[in-house]
Length: 298
Image 1 (tube, rainbow, N blue to C red):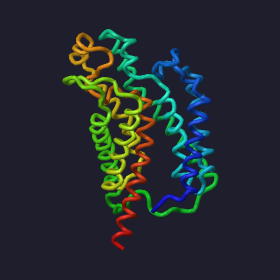
Image 2: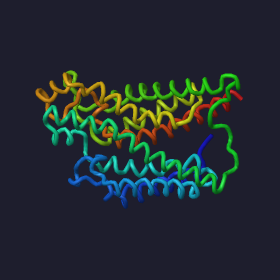
Image 3: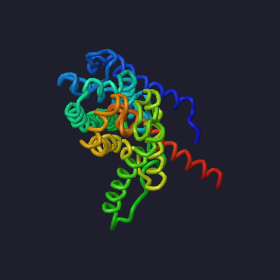
Image 4: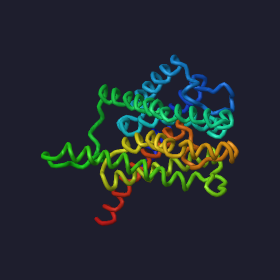
């Protein structure tokens, strides 16, 4: 199951659509006061947030038609591709730590950051809603199996709920485990230095790709659940690694560029943007892997 040059072109066009319209042209909506500083949801006005949501819906809708008849599969890339540009242009979590040097300030900071992934995930979801509207406007021919396996009617809903819960928990655990491995900066004892942005991009993308691959391979579920888990990873890590006794020691003994865990050095927008893109890539890689095994066997 090789991607044709035409499908690759459609993927590139849709990703470029989101990158240009959201990532570059809409950057003033979310740009931090310091051009080189980290981007936070708290710096975005209500009007700018509404404009971003409308823009995400629009790029999803347009992306569907640009990639038709594969719009359902490709159009979803537009919104997270735009956020990915923001995530790369943003500063780092270490800069936020430097701006909030005391224990009280850092606790307040992470209390706010814990809920920030929900907004970025909402932006991605609105982009997908634009894709669904496009699909309703002009349905594509039915594709071959890429979704979930059928369940017996008697226990269909129960087994689906259980599978989804397993997918969410497994995705969060798998992604967190591999981010800790791939997003390693300089390590001194239990403390980890702020990784470079490029290393964070690779770590989050690959980690969620592995999670989505496992979810598709063993549970036959789509990339939606690993993508949702990108918000859970940030919230869970902040709850665990920013407790008072841990952060008090770090505030007193370590520079602001060091963290008790590499996962909390990832900004929420970086986690959701590249977590979503990695989840989509891992899902389709699992499908491609299954096709190759069938070809080899047959």
